[in-house]
Image (cartoon, rainbow, N blue to C red; front, top):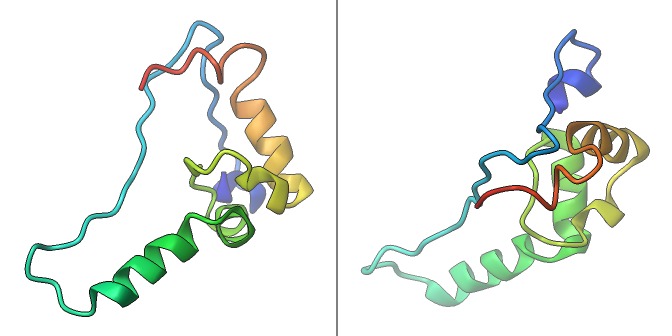
Length: 93
């Protein structure tokens, strides 16, 4: 989406029948120090108000359900084109 938003001649689109989906996540190493700060960072990154501007910039979709409400028109347009009709609800996790 970032390339498309930049005007590059690329696009992608999930078929209406469904597509493979994945969710990126975070983990904490077992011997990590500063775990309070790590949890604060994770909490920050999963708040829609924070993740919306990030996904609008880099184009990677977010697992945060209302993140798109905090993006711009370009992201919303590209997202709608990538997942037309029932394509979004037909994703296979």
